[in-house]
Length: 320
Image 1 (tube, rainbow, N blue to C red):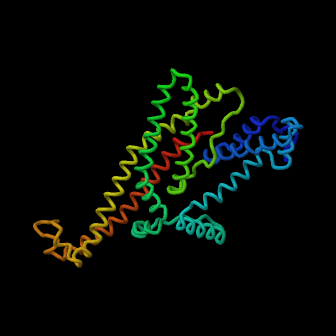
Image 2 (cartoon, one colour):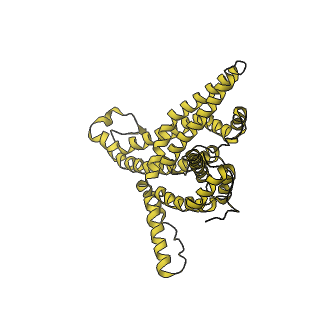
Image 3 (spheres, rainbow, N blue to C red):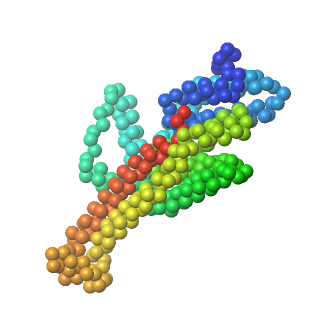
């Protein structure tokens, strides 16, 4: 427990100490911890109106923990969260590696993965399928985000000459923050990138104009708007890649079915003068190419998912 000399006297001071204790941690973790701590402290302060802020914080620090202790708890819990989002294959490898270290007592050098098992093992990775679904979904989300951002920016600029301009802009910026949380949940669920689960911590001191200024000068507000604008071209690109790769791979993979069912006679695909209907042996290489195309598509989806997750992390998470 902390002594009285080191006990913070105000909520902002407590949050500053908690932020300092979490320095170097994942920004998404820091954002969640600050929001949870602020909500809890303000709830405690509301339940004890007869006590001053310093007394309530001293009681909280002695019963629930000082900022350093709370930071340690969040860090330990984050390890469990990271394990939960780890793919099953990676979790097994991590468990085996840890077991090897414990039994032998020396560090274990990770052996390079067999290229063949790496290539075909993508079929067992649920993140690859989730990333592929995200690519298909990104067209709809990209259109919505882009339309919302452009409409909101245009109306905010147009209403500035009216009395409703400032309230409308504040509501629009608030919706942008809310949509960033929604997108963060999609990114974390489908792409496996740790994203905030709580809104960004904001200072509550000051008047209404101070709050507006904080929103407007917050880099995350404009970074989120940039992300929403980028999602339209990215969504079109992701959707096109996913649909094209899946369509081509599945059409080649199902070539033997078209031949056996007689539909091959309706296909005019030719290769060096040979048609699909007249050369049944073409079915074998087409089937193999189609099967390999499915694995390539999953690898591409997983790679795009990782890159997009990095971009979303950079633009949507407030750096503490």
